[in-house]
Length: 270
Image 1 (cartoon, rainbow, N blue to C red):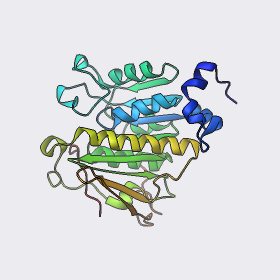
Image 2: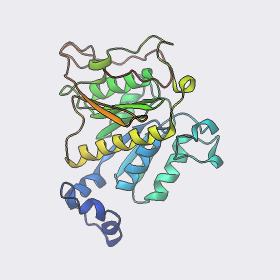
Image 3: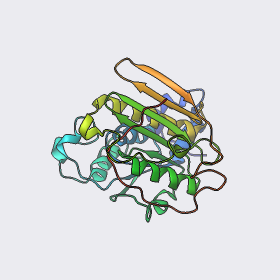
Image 4: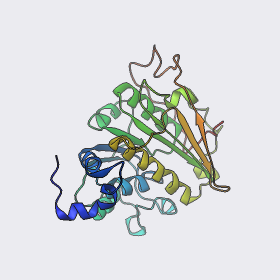
């Protein structure tokens, strides 16, 4: 049992007061290891909330640097940090909000040759990437490694997310099979995205991680949650694992491959 000091008891008091979390749940949070892939629009609120919650070890992976066009939605970065590595910018804010957590940075673009090594130490993975190639790679790697994870995607005013328990619930490939051909789906760079939508979805993904860690509530297994911020309509679509899925099915993958990249996509649900 973790021996919380007075400062920690005060810091985490609102979690400890929750009947479904309590002191035991906060102990689980402080012992947990969560990897965030992407330090951009989704990764920013995810990283903030995980650090604030006291997740013991948070990994953050991103090979990019801060650009002024990021600042409209990537709230963990500042104007003064334009040109700085995103993972280092994010780490500074995470430790500023909670110096009691450990932040491990991976300044790299993940691919089939390195992603399994990166995800290996973590209990839960959160996909905050901005392209189909990365999302399918994260899915494949987590299924192969048996790592539960949260998928998220945003475009314009919309967002979607699902949580995957490998080989027990539907995976990303069960639903979408393969990336669409390049140019078929618009990108955030070409179609835009409302900055606050990234915050909305990132907060949901962080909540999914904390629910998984503590056992509180029901994660979005076998469910795709989608929303449109223009109307604030939310929809949950029930899913089912596909026995013939090329990734998690009975004859699923045994190795990884890289996919053809295309940037910041979201396939409409339903």
